[in-house]
Image (cartoon, rainbow, N blue to C red; front, side):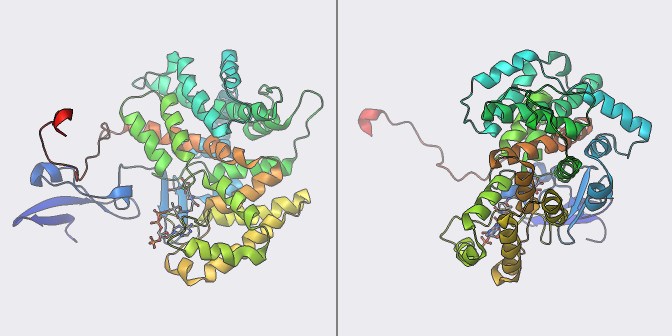
Length: 428
Ligand code: SDX
């Protein structure tokens, strides 16, 4: 296909389709006219070979284990940047000057409060409600409060809605946690950084001064950076599809939260730590490896495998190192980390995992750190959603600005009954 054209021959007729180059990574065959030309659809359940859009936000090389945000490697961003700076980078396309970052941070900080009536939504939930259920409900409800920023055709309103979502997710996430433990909500503080403010709203109590441990603030900020965006994953594709109908940004992000909750996606961090705790000691690892390989057993090694990475998830590499650093600095000896390391070593030598190229992903080590910081496992996916809101919002804005954008409407291979006449019940 050196000439930039793909030829598809159907029924003796040849059809040419342009091959488009990206700046890096796989080319695409532009098949938008295939159905009009041939009357045939493509068939790609799970979209394993389908590019749904053009994007300049995030590039993943699954074979090399490379992840870039606007061209910058994730390990460099995790080690040298901040979540607010990465948010600016994803939204605006370039690393900010100090003045630009200060202005962006000032703006986000002053949108962290939520409408006081939003607190009423929490009281409708049982105290033992899963915090992701609360996030789905409360974030979707935001569209009832911010009508002045729901016109997606107005760039000013899109920017305000984007800032509101990024700013209010930590407040709502902290409120979901506080509600689950029966403690009073803690208001945002404008004198704290984005991540320190979240930790204060989550863990401080009115009865005493809360000490912000810089080790924990740094680890939390790094975790947010590592979860910010990840190309066209399931929840991001959900946000884009919801947005393609013109739905308001608050509803689109609520849809993304719902999709992320699944254990095959963002719910895997909670499932992975629960799995590691269930395994308990390294001597029980072989039993679980055997279950993961057993076709008749639905069990999968949570935190392992990835649709795109067929090498190490670069985020898992950063988190693996951070897990040791954070637990050492906090003086925590969690046997789950030893089990995780032993499990990784055994799995990566096992032919099943080697042949299927199953490596630890972002969810394998994150739970060990989040647990050390003090979060219950039910909050892990909420933290993923908090961070991924930056990516969802950036992808949503990119979609709306894309001239090729139209409502997403996939077709199907129909395998149901062909036309038949209705039969009255007395004749069935
Ligand atoms: C995230 O897309 C993204 O970018 C997502 C994400 C992001 O940042 O947005 O990176 C976040 O979702 C990470 C993934 C978290 N999920 C888990 O850790 C759950 C465990 N992993 C699997 O469910 C699975 O690996 C997926 C869902 C992640 C990927 O599944 P695919 O690409 O559809 O691959 P597959 O299910 O077809 O698996 C290929 C083979 C299968 O065996 P065969 O049918 O070919 O014989 O590998 C096997 C699977 O059974 N396999 C596993 C396995 N993962 C895949 N076997 C055991 N344990 C596993 N974890």
